[in-house]
Image (cartoon, rainbow, N blue to C red; front, side):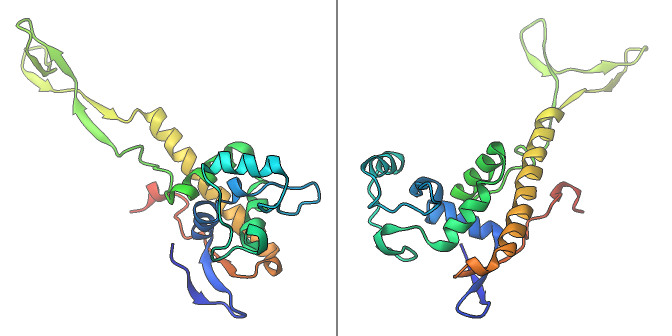
Length: 200
C-alpha cells in the first residue's frame, strides 16, 4: 500500500481504499480489537478470555511492539477510528468492505469477464458440434451462442461493486467529519470509479 504526500503536522494523504487495506490487512483491526464497554480498545493485556480469543482468531500471538502500535499492543488510533466508522455500516456491507480490504482487492464487477461460446450439440454419431439454425430452405443461417456469465450473475457482481464503492464514499465522508481524531492520515478519495462498466 502506498501512502503519499505530506498533509501537514506529520500526516499523510491516503485514499480511503488504501486506508482500509492498512486497517484490515496490516493492522487487522477487526481481529485485534476487543471493545470494552466504555469503547476503549483492549490491548493484549486485557482479559484472559480476550487474549485467548484473539490468539484463536489470528492463529498466533501478536507481539504488539511493531510500527504503528501503541503501548501494550493497542491498535493505532487511526485504525481504531476507521474500524468504528466501518462498524456503523450494515453487516453485509461490513463483510464486503473488510474482505476486500484484507485481501487488497476490489469486487470483480465483470464476474470474470464476458465470454461468448457456441451452443453445442451431439450428433447421431456422438460428435460434439456447434448447433446450427437453418432457414426454411435448409440453408445454414446462424449458430446460437450463450453469453457468460448469465445476466443475473453479472448484475450481482455489479451490485457488490456498487455496495463496496458506496461504502467507501460513506467511510471517507464520516472520517472527514472526525478528521481531528486522526493522527497519521488525511483522507482522500475514493479514487475507484463508481460505475466502471460505463467507462468508454
